[in-house]
Length: 157
Image (cartoon, rainbow, N blue to C red; front, side):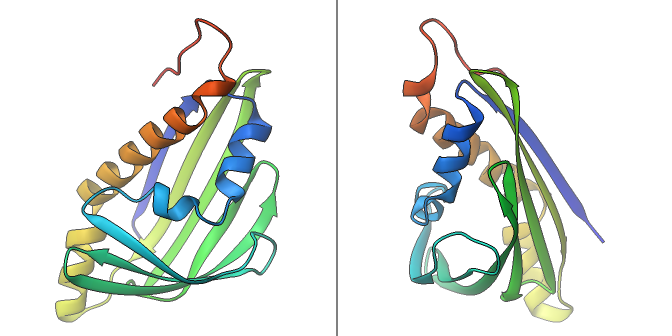
């Protein structure tokens, strides 16, 4: 089964990074153009909470339902219950490197369905698409949390 790993640092304390990711509206902020996210139902992030949304890739709607697992201050996992892929499990981990720096680790395990649907998911959710998505998320996370950085500190890779 394919996996995708991505990590970066943020010049912010782990609590600020966790709070940012626990905000139920953050999915809209973390989705790069030309993707538009329409939230249908999003429970406050907690063990077993559900999220239902549509990701619009231009004119193409992709409906998704996910459940959140292993929710805590240093991360959580979202697992596709219904959606475009055969399987999707995305684990977010926030590790404090010091009082003002946090490492964000993203680990995705996924598989594509067979047939024409699989061709579509490979286009949107293949390694190039995931690299673009998570690079955008890194930039947005750093920008959103920049006020937490001590004077003169910037985020590294």
